[in-house]
Amino acid sequence: MSELLRCENLTKKYANTTALKGINLTLESGKIVGLLGPNGSGKTTLIKLINGLLTPTEGKVLVNGNAPGVKTKAEVAYLPDNSYLNSWMTVKQIVDYFVDFYADFREELAYEMLKRLGINPEMKLKTLSKGNKEKVCLILVMSRNAKLYVLDEPIAGVDPAARDYVISTIINNYNQDATVLISTHLISDIEQILDEAIFIQNGEILLHKTIDDIREEHNKSVDELFREVFKW
Amino acid sequence: MVKKLFKHEIKAYARVIVPMHLLLIGIALMCRFVQLFEAETDAYMIVFNSSLVALCIGAIVCSILTIVFGVRRFYQNMFSSEGYLTLTLPVTTNQHLFVKTAVAVLSQIASIVMILIAGCCASLGDVCIEVIKVVVYYIKHLFAQCGVHAGLFIGEFILTIIFSLVSSYMVFYACIALGQRAKKNRIGVSVGVFFIYYMMVQAISTMFTIVITVFYEQLHLEQLIEYLLKHQIFAYHMLFITDFILSAIIITIGYSITKRTIDRKLNLE
Image (cartoon, rainbow over all chains, first blue to last red; front, side):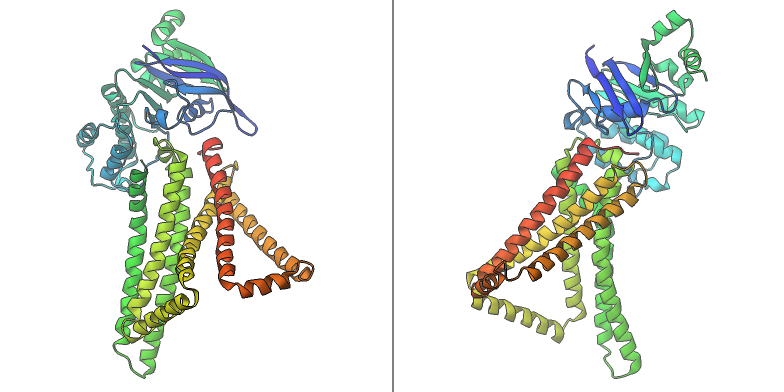
C-alpha cells in the first residue's frame, strides 16, 4: 500500500477563526476512511483543501505526491455536500460532461446504475426529486475510476433506505486500489464499511486509528466512542 | 481540454442566446410584413410605428441580455454551487478564463451581427439597398482618401471593438471575483466594486479634461493639434493604438485579479 494523501502542518484561517490547526495526516491507498466530527469541526474545510477549492494558510496538502492542481483533480473524485449540477441539463448531458472531462469515467457503469434506479437519462435534473438528484451525483462520482474518492456528507439528509443504497453504491463501485474518504456525523450507518476513522474537532485531529484498533483498545464501537468523545 | 470547455460553454450560451436571436429576427420579419400593407391611415401608422418600436426594444434587450447572461454565467459557473464541479475539473484557471471570455465576446459579436441582420430583414427592399449603397460609398471614399491605410483602419476598428468587449468582460469578472473575497453579501460587494470602478473612470476622465483645458497653452497642445491635423492618418492610427493600450492594461489588471482570486482566495459557500 502506498501513501495517497499527506497533510503537513495544514492550517486554514478565515478572518476571525482558525478552521484547521496544523493538521498532520497520512492516508494510504486501498482504505475506506471515515472523517468523523461534529458540525463546524473542520471536515469540509479539509475536504475543500484536498480538492484545491481552498488555499492553505500554512502547511501543505499532497495528493499522490502532488499539490492540488490539474493533475490531482484528474485523480480525485469529489462529492460535495450540496447540489452542484446544472439543473437545466438532462442526466445524459451531465454524463457526457463527465465523459468529456474525466478520462477515468466509466460511462457504461453510470448508465447501468441509472437504469437500476429507474432514472431516465433524458430527464432534466430539475424534474428529479431531491433524493434522486443526490443519487445521480453519487453515481457520477462513483462511476469514476479515481485514486481518491472524497465524499462530503453523502448520507446526510437522506432516508434510511436511501442510505443503504448510497453505502452499497460506494462499496460496489469504488476502485479497490483507491481510498475513499467519507465525511459524516452519522457514524452508525457507515461504521460497518470503514477501515479507519479520523475524529476531528475544532480543527484538530483527536484520533486516527483503524476500526479494529478502536474496538480492541476502547472496547467500544466507533459510534459509541464518538458519542463519548464529542459529548456535550 | 480547451476544445471541450468551448463545446460545453457554447452549448450553455446557445440555449439562451439562440432563441433570443430567433425572436429578434421574428420581430424584424413581422416589421417587414407590416410594411407590405403600406397605407396613409392612422391605424397603419400606429401598427407600423409599434412594430418599429418593438424592433428597437428587441435590439436593445438582445444586446443587454447578452452581457447580463455572460456575467451571470461566469458568476454561477465559477462561484455558486456549480463552482464545485467547474473548479474541480482537471482544467487550469487560465483555460477557464480564456474560454469564458472568448465565448462571452463571441456571443456579444453574434448579437451585434444578429441586430444588423434584423435591421436588414426589417428594411428588405429599397431601404436596405440604399443603406448598403451608402456603406459601400463610404468604404470606397475611405480607400480613395487613405489608400492602404483604409484597410488598416477597418482592421483596427474591428480589433478595437473586440478589445473593448474583452476589457468590459474582464472588468465584470474582476468585480465579481473581488466580491467573492467578502465574507457576506458577495453580490452586493461585487456591485459596489463595479460602482467604485465606474466612478473612478469618470473622475479620471473629468480630471484629464480639466488638465487639458487649464494647461492648454503650457502643454503646447495647439502645436500638437496642428501636427495631428496635418497628419490625420497618423493621428487615427495613434488613436486606435492608445485605445488598444488602455484596453490591454484593463484586461491585464482584471485578468490578474480574477485569476488570483480563483487560485489563492477561493472560498465557495
